[in-house]
Length: 199
Ligand code: IMP
Image (cartoon, rainbow, N blue to C red; front, side):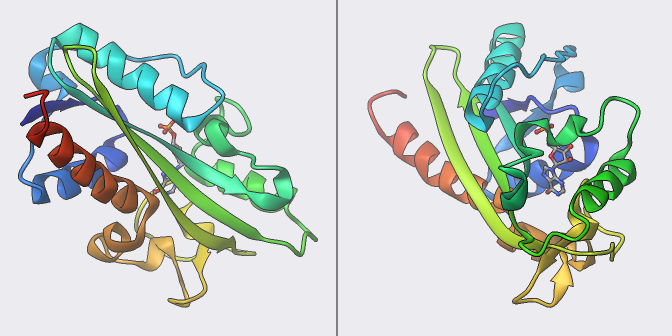
C-alpha cells in the first residue's frame, strides 16, 4: 500500500519511515506529492489530533494518509504537557528549552512517573480510518543525558535499561518506543483491514 505521511517533524518522520518501510509499506512525504498541509491541532486528545492531521492530508492528496500525534504525559502534572508537548512553554522554545522548563516545573517533585504516547491514524480516500495507540512508560530524569532521538528523549529515563531514550540507538528506541508500539499495533490493524471486505 502507498501512503503519504502527514507529519512535518523531520525526526519523527525518520522514525515513522524506518518502521513502516520495515512493514513493506511504500511511504511518501508530502513534499514528494506536492502538498504542504500544516494542520492546527485543536483536539483535546491524541486521537482527535491524529485524525485531524491524517484527514487533512488525505483530502489534499486523495491518497491514504498516515499521521502520528504524540507527546509526553507526566502524572504529577495531571497529564501535562500531553497534547501540548510540541508547544509547551509557547512558540519561542526549542526542544531543549521545553525539557528545561519541564525539569524546572518538576523541581522538588518526588513522583516522576511519566509516559510517552503515540496515536497513529490512517485515513483512507473512501472515508475509512484506522487508529492505533502505543505507550512507553518511564521516569522523568533530574538532568539530561544522551544525544539521540529528539524532543524530551534526553530527560526520559528508562529504569530497566538504565539509560535515557536519547542514549538508545535508533533501532533500540524503535523496539520499545510508544511510536514503535503504536505502529506494530497499526500493522496488525492494517492487515486485518486489507484482508477484510474493504479492499
Ligand atoms: P506532535 O507533532 O503534535 O505530535 O508533537 C509531538 C511532540 O511530543 C514532539 O514535538 C515532542 O516534543 C514530543 N514527542 C513525541 N514523540 C517523542 C519522542 O519519541 N521523543 C521525545 N519527544 C517526543
